[in-house]
Picture 1 (tube, one colour):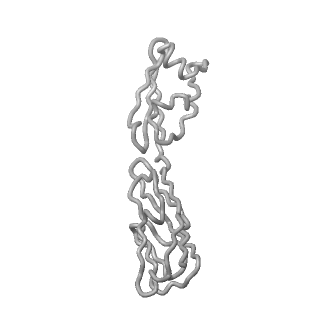
Picture 2 (cartoon, one colour; picture 1 turned 90 degrees about the vertical axis):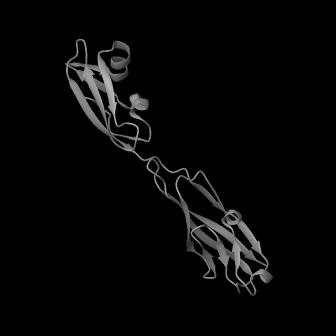
Picture 3 (cartoon, one colour; picture 1 turned 180 degrees about the vertical axis):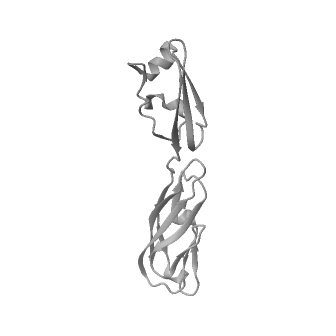
Length: 176
C-alpha cells in the first residue's frame, strides 16, 4: 500500500518524493526514499507528471520484492501571482468641465506578476467614472469637485499551468 498520494500543485512528482510517506512489502513497512534510493528494491516510473492533470507513478519491485503498484495523482494549477494596487489621481476641474478626461492604466493602477491576459472592469464608483477593458479610466465631463473612490476588478486570465485571479483595487480620484 502506498500512503500519502493525493494531489500536488504545479511541481513534477519527481520533485515531491517527500510527499509519499511509506510503502508496504509483505509485512514490513519501508520509507519510500530509503527503499527507492538506498536499497534499490524498487524502481519508480513517472507518467504524465509534468503538466496539470492526472499523472501516474509506477512502482516495480526488484530483487526480493515482486509486483507492480500503480497510483494516480492529480497535478493542480498553481495560483496566479497577480498583484495590483490602485493609485491616487488629481485632476483639475477645468480639465473635465467641458470634455471627458482619459487616464491611462499605468497612471491609475500598478499591476505586476500577472500570468495571462489582464483585463479591467468597474466594480463600483460614481456613474461619471468608467473603466475600459484595457484599464483606461474615463472621467466624464461635468464631474463635480470632490474626492471619489473607483473600485476596479483586475483579472489575470491564467494559462494552462496557472489559475485565473481577480483582485479589486481602489483608485482615488480627486477633482479640485
